[in-house]
Image 1 (cartoon, rainbow over the protein chains, first blue to last red):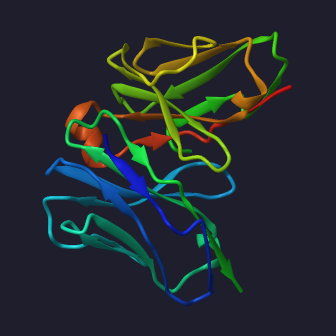
Image 2: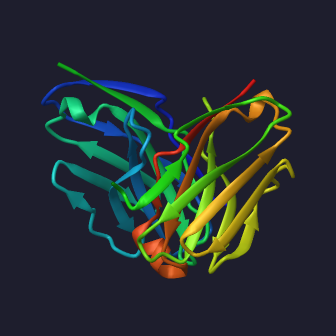
Length: 114
Length: 116
């Protein structure tokens, strides 16, 4: 079974600064996908960024980028130029190649301060 | 609008009540999921349906009964719940199999359930 661990329950960052959220996972599979989801107070889970394990290049989506270290089973999210709208819960998630079970970490609550 | 709609948004029910949660997706997906999100616990996968067939039941108590009449609709029937069942119940959908893996799941906004 796969496990996903987010070791930072809460973080805060000043507006316009950069923040990095940590995630580690455990799996015996070689092909899989990793995701970061954002859950604002509206409760809707929004996909922020995805990474394919067979790709060495780190994924980037505008102000969001990841640092994927496959050997270390680490998948951190970097948010640049933080905005007030980035305030939310952030969840790291893992899925295997068969796609039948998306497993989440415990989440990190991010507060962006003005 | 994400394409996955859940109703009701909030629900308060007594322990002897029977109620149902509804989920509907208009994305042409073939797989649908129920997750439970409790305070201070990771999201827990409850049920998985692929092409209307239940393929996963994650040791969920029988007081939760899912129903998937077609690939676009998913229900969660609730009866004789306990206060510890109070949580946010999230529905999600995806393409089946490898497509679901590749693009992740699309989630609804959830139903906040309170059992009194």
